[in-house]
Amino acid sequence: MQSFIDLDRTFAGQPREIGALLARIDRGRGREGSFEDQLPELLAYLAEHARIASITASNAIEGIVVASGRAERIAGGGRRYRNRSEREFAGYRDATDALMRLHEYEPLTVPFVMHLHRLLFAHTDGNGGRLKTDENLIVSYEGQRKTVLFTPPPPEETEFLLKELLLRYEEAKHEAQAHPLVLTGALALDLLAIHPVADGNGRLARLLTTHELLAHGYAVARYVSIEQRVFEAKNSYYASLYESQRKWHEAEHDIWPWVGYLCRILAGAYDDFEQRVDGTRRQTGNKQARTRDYILQQAPEEFRRRDLERALPGISPATIRLVLGDLRDAGLIAPMGSGRGARWLRL
Image 1 (spheres, one colour):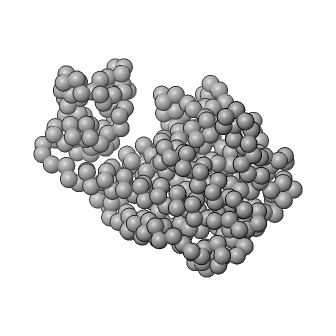
Image 2: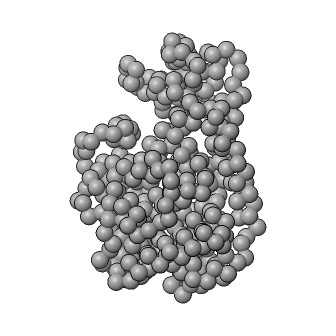
Image 3: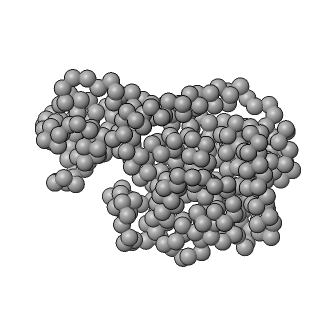
């Protein structure tokens, strides 16, 4: 809530770098609409790939790891879980899918936030959807010493602070007090500072960030995994959060390290998205050459034949099988398993 008490102070002094990043992101957003009409098959493929990557990465940030084969099966809707990690993985799947199905975006409320949290833990102990009842310090164990990095507000203040945060955020958004991405960053920062639930605060903040990106028209969140990019820059994630939460309780904190981090993540996501789209547009030559180029330069390091079929509309399964065989014989890829469901590894 502290970021929205004195808006003039909070949003003053925006660094020039962030202004440039916001302009870059907005240019990317402006080009999204044309892609949806021209390359629907590619976007459908990217959306499914991003979905699985987001579920995997957001859990991995919290140390929740599921083997790739199991992750794909659970992301596809599997309901048999072997351990708690797989159950929490399934919870993030359900919460992500709930956001992606939305066509209208209502103002954020405490019941909606608790609904997302309930989905996160629906397959575990059923304690989702409840505010914290005990103190939850943010600590580090680096060097085998426990260090308190940040002390969130006590449980008795949580409900008021969370409700007030959402009300002030929605008011600032309605009145366009700052760029939508700056407001979204401040929202996530305050939510993580309040730490309203006993477990799952980071995942909850990332889900709400995705909700607001989509609500503001930044559809890249559907096609590129923002969570994967956060996971790959995890050290910067924690460093910028720590820097921006200093003096948060006194409302004298600096939101820009955190907002700058978020903007760099989003600008990179748009770069990745446009490179993939442009690469598809520039593909030339016969269908075998296009397939070979995609496998060697654009496909994930591990992929399946049906992934190629989705990503290469207009190219027959027979052509894809032929190219896979040629690349295997040339020692450029290797099969892992057999049959249509086999995975391939680019060497």
